[in-house]
Image 1 (tube, rainbow, N blue to C red):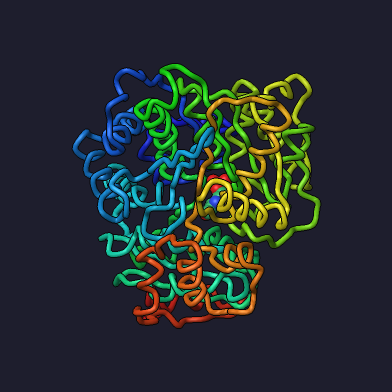
Image 2: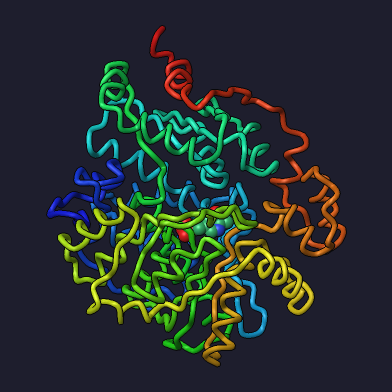
Length: 491
Ligand SMILES: *Cc1c(COP(=O)(O)O)cnc(C)c1O
């Protein structure tokens, strides 16, 4: 298997695509083809076996032992369910729980394997330097990456998080991070400031040269890396075979998937699964108030020139969904010139898909939920289905309900459940009790546990006992200094 850039004819081996993350022309790497999955072969597999079966089709320059090593080190007892991605069936809908990893959100599904893939790939491509993972986070990614790269040899990880804008649980999760190779820095400012500062360092050629002389190279754990995207295909097939095993669907029966969407990574993995033969009828693309994707799917026009909202589903507060580029490339028949033109237009804020491709968008049903809708669904699902969901999952459920009402489609629908309700406990507790007085999230977690009878996850309970390890802060312009200090570049 070779990977190709969405913007030119650059072709690379899987390992090189993993190490590079992004192509030299700024494009994203896409596979040259989508191998078929044989349903009969995978029916009896467990999660690890299925991950091996699917990832082997893409990471073709890995030896079997190498890939097995990655998988065995990723999907182990770090997950608090031996199933890794359990499916909770409630009537016509099934919730695919992707939050059983260490950080209680779905980023763990790919980030737990990514460091191992990166390690093997960098050895294969002859990288000699120590890898420095540099990440700006709005909450979930940073912690998942820290946890994933902790104590991985030959790697250091530095995470910048905005002082304003992460929840108390998210902050505590990061500042108590263990591991000799982990560094966490609070930046004065919001997520955009942190993101911009880190991007600047990343693209600074002079600084990269200095780094290289000292024996380091930068890499990112960004969601556009193929090592983040392809492991996500696995759980869609896993959900399907689980439904068959449970007798909830027949072999070959079509299902829908409702996905709470931000960067378009998770839902793109579902789209890729469909291209590999998974029987998906409709893909339900769920947004919050930041509904750029909703407008795009309705009209074919992508327009980011709008107000940015901070919502109760913060991991979806995104205006530019970077993985959408891969989808565009696919529906326009791999036309890299068109992709270049659209991405260029996006720099000034807007592009329009050519008329002849707009029909393709009908595979998706798009919708969005306001904060009020989101909280209402958290209540409804607990009352009617006796099931506790987080705000991101509630957005997906809301859009699914609208879809069902509009279309009367009664196919089995998988609601992709991306976070534990305890990770966003403030919103969940307030939605259920209308009480917003208590500010301490760890106390709230206890209260929520008592109120709903759903056990507080160990990862939250432990936070109380953990020591604060990381106290570093920096100003908006202090990112260089912080990195120089951490890597001891001046010493
Ligand atoms: C990242 C994230 C999303 C959005 O996923 P994308 O792949 O960016 O579309 C949704 N929910 C949670 C909890 C997340 O952390």
